[in-house]
Image 1 (spheres, helix red, strand yellow):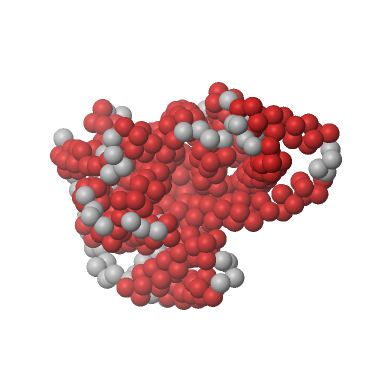
Image 2 (cartoon, rainbow, N blue to C red):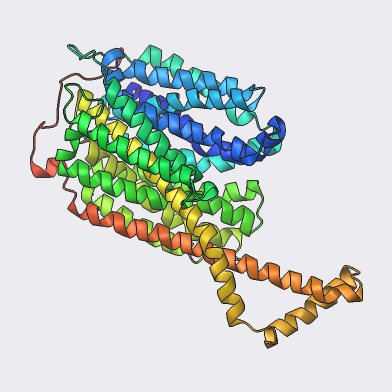
Length: 523
């Protein structure tokens, strides 16, 4: 493989990494936005929700748009939109402008990420597909993991608006150099008809689903609004499937699911993503809210498993290319290590130091690094042209939907189990227990001698301290419940993974190919 192809691959991954970083980096600056825009929490949350919805809705368009304007131009359009809106979000004067900017920024991510996977798969030679998917996995897993770390540093040492400005220069460089190095190839005889009916139905279905998942815990899962959103999502999804199976030029080619390797890998991806994003969401909360680590310290802890994911992804890709490990073996071993890693997360407690926490999180990162490059290569098979774009877009859409479901369920488990654990603890422990009376005596002594608390208030304040400790322990048990949920998702994801049989192992030749077009490199 020549050096130019590798440079182009690195540029593509840089752009993708940048867009996926924004899925988590903004979370850290929500409190600052609330102050800057004088907005409520429920209003500022739309900054995140709008980005996620716009990204999901635009992903299926990649199949049609890539054939219309070419793969390189579709990718550059996505990065250009993302970069321009990053600058505008950085100078947004109010919440409304910020949300509009985030919507267009999300469209950019929705175009760029699936096309990044498509381009990497096309420009790398057959014997380097594993490396290409390893590079993709670096961006896909490393980007979201580093969001809290980079966001924390930028907010601490510069200004919260730099979480948007940081994208501008890399975005410009990616667009400029790829315009010079990578030739745009368009399909001959591409169908110009855009499936507007399918797009409308899918947009409504995804939008209502993601809003329901994002707001279900705050609005209440039994509230009229959430129920209406879920029913709307289901009805429009069924209508979408009906239309796509009958229209001449479908927005999403559902015939992809006739291939067992694609169907089983898709199911495994969704279940794995549910567990993965549940941990993604919970770990910063555990570190910052429950353990009291600073944003910087929490980011440093999460950096190590993320970095290991990137390294292992590249190693796994190379091993696959050299036929030292099969795709199915990599997928199953990755899931098994991931399951072990999420099981270890349930052992996180209230006294562990940074080093011990990092060591417990490392297997989790290793599992992701082995799983992602192998699964991506299986799902793409030997597809070409529109089928390749469709496969890439669906993989990323399923990642996003699975992650949203996992995050929503994790939040529900955390908030709904706390009170039950608290009641269970208070029922099991009597106020007359020796441990309680001893701690009460120590708390009173501390309050009297070190806090100068008046004698009449000692009893009530000591009880308040014990009550706080009970509540903190109840939350800790709820966090363990969430990590157990992530482990269950990992266990479930291995079931379809067992049935995955990569296409090359089945001896099929080009049955999924739709065109013979390829991407070429200038020079």
